[in-house]
Image 1: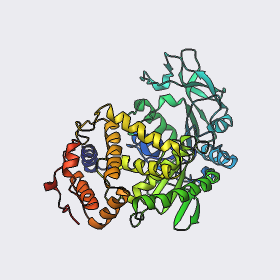
Image 2 (image 1 turned 90 degrees about the vertical axis):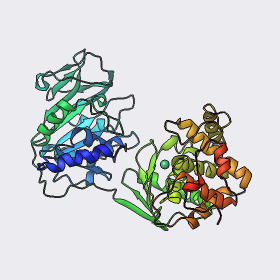
Image 3 (image 1 turned 60 degrees about the vertical axis):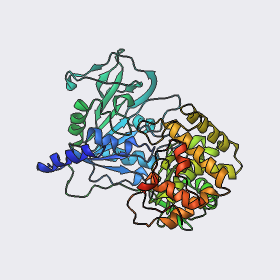
Image 4 (image 1 turned 135 degrees about the horizontal axis):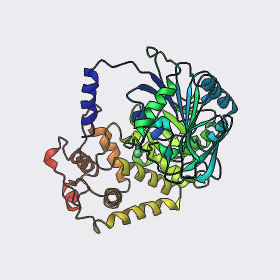
Length: 462
Ligand SMILES: [Zn+2]
């Protein structure tokens, strides 16, 4: 269903003669990674007018020659802006580019405050108060605002939006040839699914006005810039930039401790071609996996003070490289975290069992004996899906262990051809049956899974 809309939109766009992009934007995710800045900002505000690229590497190395808009967020306080980056961005803006800063102040000011100060703007900790007022340039624009702090702008700035006490919330300043624009974060969208393009009706034309002061050549490629640092650790490439380098080795050491446990739990190596790269992400917000590359938030879960969440996250993201290219339909995410919990247990971390017990308890709120609610049913609660998944894994281990998970992974590798198109829950139960030497369809049925042995092409015996 989610694929339907883009397909239709594409037909409409392709039918017209598309005009060349006028804006080449770069959204920076090197000072702080968020999924929103990784493409959603562009989708919400600039998709119709421009092409976007992301900057993953050190800002001072970013090639801005064919770029006319650089989008910056507050940044994470653990990563101050390098002075070379500030100088580089200054040259870009004075030379015709537009820099957009979306940020609020805080007791500990975010790193982008240092950059803004050089342009005569300060973030503050004073909360904005409604109603807001827009300058004439915005016409009678409707303003959506989700709260945040006001700015302190010197006389060279023009204010576009003020709060009830006449304090600036959004302003811009002309530089030698380009522009700097600064606004409270709550004036812009933030949803990782790009579903909240607030203020786009006036924000997009304003940004286009500023950015197109500098002409870009749409015929030249506009590509994302990857992190510049890498280090070979055996078969694994560790990836980082100048700011994240100091976090990288510590996380690589955790990975080196986690990996052998994953091999022991699953009795197999990662799937062929997987788990080649480990990217250090500037965030405490989590990580992601593409199978071949895992990305780990450098200060996830309060790391390094707290260690268990980091172990669980690394094992989770790495765990995806064991299940691909045939992810489990229902418990793709739960099985990855379950692997993380098992690694934590093997490392003697008490939080692991607590995490497991808690989720099973939350699942039982929806289905006390786990015999009533089909977790495959549409709208099944998340806690039920996760709790029931863990319960199933624990029960399989109790009845068919020790090493039930290892039996499953080994059998899955043996039974599935790499080019197999789909892997359904029926297929999954068939693999479990083969692994433990018993038809498990009735047992899964007793737990309210609507699975059916007649719908899988896999035999239940090896
Ligand atoms: Zn995951």
